[in-house]
Structure formats: C-alpha cells, structure tokens
Length: 339
Image (cartoon, rainbow, N blue to C red; front, top):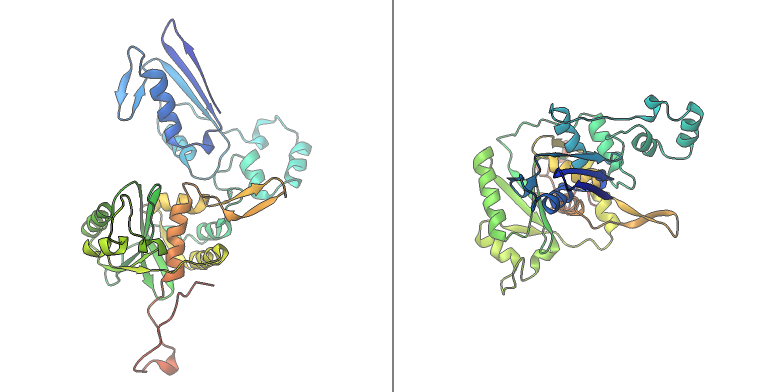
C-alpha cells in the first residue's frame, strides 16, 4: 500500500502512497515521522517532520469525501502541489466498447467511482447511501440558521477504548435540523461536559434533552469506578435519557433511515458527521458473494450509532390534530422514527 525510495547521497526522500483513499492522515504522519526524523535538515511541524528536499505522491480511487478528498482540496488551493484527475472517459486509454462492457458489469455508483473518479458516488456497501444522495439532491445539506426559540438536543454514542460521538439537533415538529457534531477519543465525561458548555456559550443556544445509549448504565467510562456513567454525567450537568438497546440492529438502522429522510444537516458544523454517515457500511462476504448483514465496526460506526440513538429515542413534541387540539392532555409517544 505504501512504498518509498530514499536517496541516501543527497538526502532527498521520494514517497509514493497508493490506495490512499482507504487511509487516514495518520498513515502519512507515521510514514513522514519514520523517514525524516533522523534526517539532517528536517523541519518539525506539529506531530510530523517535513523534509526540505523531496516529494510525495498520493494515488487512489475516490471513496467519498474522506482524507483523500481533503488532500485534493488542499492541493487545488496551493501552487506547491500538482494534482490530476484521470477519468476513463477522457484519457482515451480504454475504448468506448470496453467502458460500456465495464458499465454493464457493475452498479452505476461503482462505475462512476472506479472509472470516472467520482467523489460523489456512493461508497460500496454504504448503508445510508440512498438517504444521503436524497439529502444532497434536495439541498438539505446546507447552511442552517439556528432557531433561538428551540432547544438544542443531543444524541450520543460513548466509547471507552474508541470514539465518543455527539450529534446536536433542533426539532421543528417531525423535522430535525442537525446543527453540530463532535467526536473525540479517550476522554472522560468531564471533557464532553466542557465541550457542551463551550458550544452553548459560542453558539448561544440552550439545551433540551440528552439521549444516551444503554451502556451509560455501566459503572465506568475511561477508568473503573463505582459510580455509573449517567450519575457522573448528571453531577456535571448532563441529565441523560437512556435509550434502551435495540435487539435487532436492522431496526435501529431503519429508524436512522427514516430520520435521515426527514432531516436537514448543517454543512459546515457537521462536516465530520456527514463523512461518518457517508462511510457507514457493511463488508463484503466473499464466501457467499453478498453484503454482510452487520455493519462494520470502524471509525464511521460511532457517529452513525449516535445518530441512531437519537432516531430510536427522540420523540418530537406532540402536535395535536384539529379534533384534539384543545384536549387537556395527551399520551407520551415513543420515537417517531423507530420501527
């Protein structure tokens, strides 16, 4: 996946990273630090060292708006980088007959990704591909104004050894506006409580309900302890509503799909969350030649699970029908999107 050539005599480092669309920026940071830390004339920059003399080439097939996409955006804005997108329909390396044969053997999204270098085509096995495509077609991924009259709710997925993800949203009846997203690793409850407070001050909103997964009833987050996570969180000002575990993951996914079909997402503040939803996928079962039923547990699963926590737990404020508009009370309703 990664190869490199080092010219020892002139200390010039030449690096080629192929399949980079399946990597993260960590791969380049690790590679960079290994090859240039001992070199003379190296400059230190944050976590990485950068060689003064040398070049790096990043090659890959698009897989959505991931780190490879981000790298392309930076290259297009810089005079120091050369970039090129080589579409099969434009290079002339394959005949029209060969391209037609390839198109007939695969889905349109896969053809656009593999042959036309499309970063917009759905990732193979992406669970929310249809919903995300519809969101973009309807221009529901956009700049969203905050409604000062509405509370901001949160839905979470917590991680002890991996990521904790939080979606921030406002409800307008059954319409949901995702207005922010946050994710981090190996942090305590106090850290996320501070994040919530910082965002409240920065964006001038007030909080409503906080929806957490069933494992908030556990007795530790990062370090073992006697107190349950939800009790520690409550002492820090986060009073969680625990969403019961859904026995069948497909039901949670269906609830998530229903929610996405009725939501808007802030393009700027939820950029990382959008990437998560685009990349949440199932793996390919080579033995049975079909997609696996269970989603992959990877970097995208935490944010997707947080969204599904909201889909399975949140119920919009009751809006009575005309015949019941002046009734004195109403029944508590479960999630409007849960199957």
